[in-house]
Image 1 (cartoon, rainbow, N blue to C red):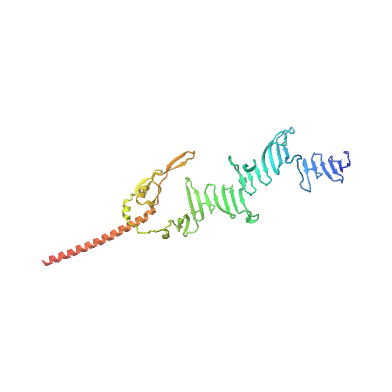
Image 2 (cartoon, rainbow, N blue to C red):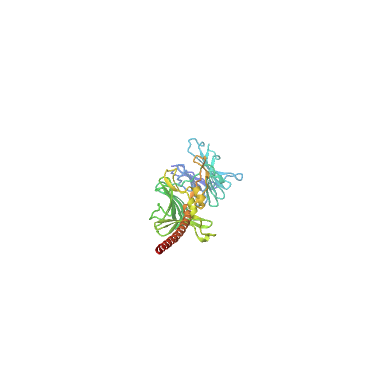
Length: 402
């Protein structure tokens, strides 16, 4: 049996060693304060310590660290790795510094100071990771904003969820039901798609092919309503909009400060390209004249496209602009500069464009002028014919009188 020491001193402390081999420090009233068991675990507030230091308390704080001396001295805890030579391993430090909590790594030789600060929680509750202040790689500001990055180099934030799960950022205005999130950005690892939510419902998606889908989860078709910017197989981008209704619908509308100035509509199996033409948008309205003379100046041509060698027919933009300027957009021989993929500045043509729909009024007026000319010609021919007939009758009468 181990020897038992039972001593009462003026401060009321007693020590004892029981049959299990544990060493206990007790207060004068018999309450065990400190226990050191055979595993060299130290227990404070417990007679059965399960760890090297096991502290249990019914009051807070359970542990208090302070450093006496001049005000502002740093109180800290140092954690050292398991180097065989005590006091020579790498250390990590947690310290209280002027109302802030700092976390440092990279200390050496068992020093209680040194290393590099990696994170700080300041007295205002701002969390800074890697550096401190506004240059940190991660800052949680007191205004509840979140800043990632420090303005130099490439910064990133990763949401990791594994290939069988979905990674997401949620935006909530409550903590139950649909209120747990109102908006979200979610990545579907199973289908490699990115989804965007508002009002707790998906509104937009980028699928694994890079297609942008709005109001739908697949490329729109006759049975799927929505719109999409589709990346076609040859690299071209196409805007596709569809609806399950066959009635007249404006699939695209165009606005400027004057309001709606055009639209692309569908009705049944047809597509209409509409430009504004309301009389309330116009003044100085007058009948068109001289249209036939304009048509006579037009120079329709055939040609081949340089890019493909395909045949075409139509007009040369600057020649058409000389006759009907409304049909042409852009300036003759215009160029523009751009930066190529290698960062070099290059020059290319800024091509003119043609909208031949503006020729309709001129062609219509020309047809009307031709029709008027034809009607006048018919009238003249009729008059001539009547005169010829009258002359024939007169000649017949003269011949009968002989």
